[in-house]
Length: 401
Image (cartoon, rainbow, N blue to C red; front, side):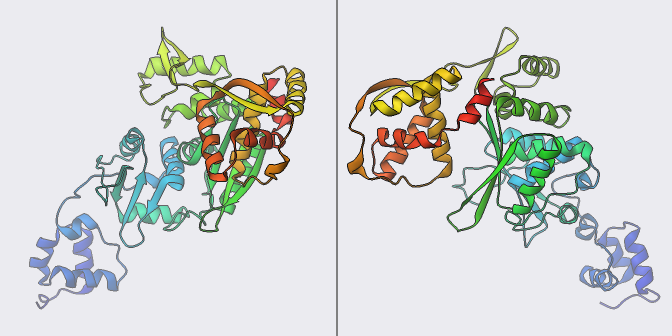
């Protein structure tokens, strides 16, 4: 199809930039839509997807969402760094979350149609897909590209929006102890974890960094904040601005040792009419947040035989710290499980002074210990006795203050 007389490249570009649909451009210029695109590519003109197709966008989205810093944008960006994916071939990004309420919140902030899609009918994790070349480009400008998990760097987040961003990171790949004493963030990027460390240091938080190897032999990093006082200090920073915040159990676990922070959250829930349906460990009773004893941290009785010598030492520590022996044991078991190391000892050298010992344990922790016992082909009391060396007395002393 030949060009019509007088249709130079400059005139074609001017007509295209006027926003005229392709069907009209073809009739005026005399070229096919592919030929018109080639003119744009030749001169490096950015293409407008809606204009090029001649059809409105199938699913709406605010394509400028990641261009301007807001508390909502920072929170969503934090979630995307941890649980998002940039498609390498297509102009598409996606968020994956077990909790669809979070995906609905993301869609709402981004002005996007809430369309859940799964590539496989057998997939169990819902995903929110957003198609946009502009958004993909803006994320790339922020240092977030395809295959980011091991190399992603910490974006240049303005100080005002750091709490919202890290709130999103914790909501995505963070873990908060249900007892409110420990929090960690997991990442495969060394650069990212040390950037977080720098921020925590500027916030005067006590933190530590550990790492383990994944099955693919890659290093996985965890940055920890431990102690109820440090967690409360962190919560006070992260939730100083409620904008863009999605209520979930991680915040509740983090602030449970602070009556005033719980009251503040209660007021927010009552004022803004937030739902507690996803806060599985807590319920609202007479206008107050309380732990749901039927599902929160259920404790179960368990009886086994332990070394008298070990129990004597545990009783000395328990009296010093004014806590129960079972909390010492649980601390050692939790730290042992976190190391993911194999248990190595001579089964023939088991203690000869074992006596019957009965106490209560966190049911979830006990199940994890039972699973490890099967894998390691040892008894549960072997694991309990082995875990004593992993008890962090300093951490327990800080938590008891």
